[in-house]
Length: 254
Ligand SMILES: Nc1ncnc2c1ncn2[C@@H]1O[C@H](COP(=O)(O)OP(=O)(O)O)[C@@H](O)[C@H]1O
Ligand SMILES: [Mg+2]
Image (cartoon, rainbow, N blue to C red):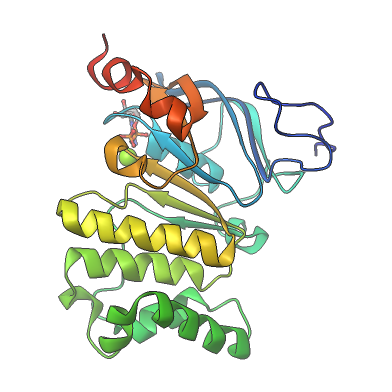
């Protein structure tokens, strides 16, 4: 259990008055002898839209799985809302307010859109669930039109929207998305990211977006952390990232 952190970050933003909602500290995670994350530290402020960018195999999914309690770190700590997540298992994480939209948008293909969303809200009261449904249908009218359709018959983009909608049914304080752009046409990715920006603006939920597609992600994130083969190699605002060589370094290794 960590106390409030009265320190400031390198860019001088965080303070005791605004402790980060998520704090990842010196995290090392491995699969047997393979180290997928090495000494990774970063913070996400309340209400922030943060990107974690990196190429294939950089350790992005490992990071989200560790925050979600699916993997246990070898070293380091994670705290959320000032409370350590140490020892919490994957089924306890949603209850603290963290929703994880996993890679490859897993939806229940043989259930309708509506039933997929209802399942996402299984932990909340009926009134909250109904209100949540209306909100989600407001953001994604295409899901409202297709509420009775089986999720497996939706397009890839629609399934991704459904996966996000299902996560929002929990009314999370932190929404984590693992490569929502994967396998989608650029125009659909643009639409998807515009929706994420809208959700962020309207609800002020904190967002952690994991992306290989840095160019598209930089359109929506406020700040980014770059992961290269398990290590943080760059951290900065959107404009700092846009003006840096991080893409070349992180993606081409030069
Ligand atoms: N279940 C696993 N067993 C062994 N190695 C794994 C496993 N999952 C991922 N890895 C390895 O860990 C590294 C990071 O993987 P991952 O977090 O999936 O990267 P990303 O999501 O950035 O593509 C890669 O080298 C990958 O091969
Ligand atoms: Mg991944």
